[in-house]
Length: 447
Image 1: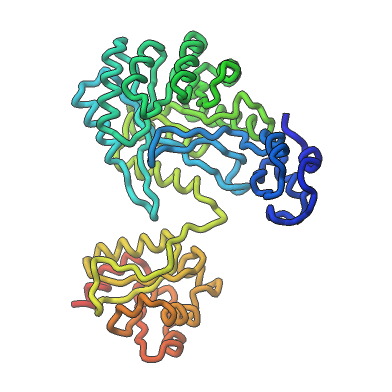
Image 2: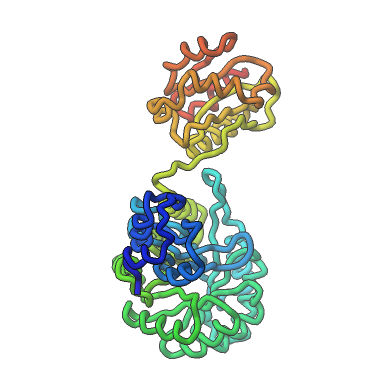
């Protein structure tokens, strides 16, 4: 049972030292009770109190690590229903489902698709995170061979054993034990055997049932049997059911403290029609899924789903930023054009992309404006003539430039006169208003 704010307060040091970021210990206790703070924020709390407050401060959705190595995926640990309350923490994993009835060549080719799916978007590496191998052949040996082939061809992806046959699961686990595969297929009929495998090999157990109450019964039994890392599937497949079930699960775990539902959710979004599949997957990503299963991972679909996932799991209160410095694009010489912009990630990557498209070696000066776009930073007084001049005068990177001509964004052309006053001897050139005008601008400038 979760503790109240007053009960938590009694276990705190009561020094009101403010080291936790809150004005009083009582205020901190109230935030702990609402799961909007973590007990680790208090440096003076006793070990005994930490143990007692473990349940009160632990995230209502259990955190689970899918896969191994640098590209493993953390799921769960969510604390809120809506991202304006506090950011969503761990982006969902996208998994390609492959049947073991496919030929070896097809399995290998599809697994290579997963391995080659990574893209760089605004400084983050985005990818298909896992391969789910489905037991459809009825042959445990064939299934183990398929799992091994997929694991070899997608060496960094997490492995999901989509199988309800404990013997086939056991055979597959033996060939990929080091990859810590997730067992997905525990149900009312095979729960004991699947639990035994999960415990023996310390694996995540995916439980499946028809409906939320049936899943609760399975998670309760699995937990009582000693399995802590569980993923739940309520059988929701349509967009309507995914929204209803996932929302009820999240609300029950966060608002009502229902421990049987405090686990990550897996959704089967697989469709023969890839466009319909993309839309169902988008619904699952937007509404609390921790793993989604797909039949198709075309690059256009990946980009759409990666972008949606990235946007949903970005802190809306903290703009994405790149470091302040002068970036060299296409190995520029000392006399290469010099552009300036703000450090909002999306602005930087759009501008840098257009500069690369121009094939003109260029220096791009990125100024720290707290992650704001050009017009927003100018309106907020963070991208002004004074601050730009200070940035240029105090940054050693500009020493590599043999000329004194600065190209500013066309949207802030109004700064040109003031900049020439603040930077004596410099020529201020007004560039295009939109980034897509940069290739023509740079080619004309260097012609």
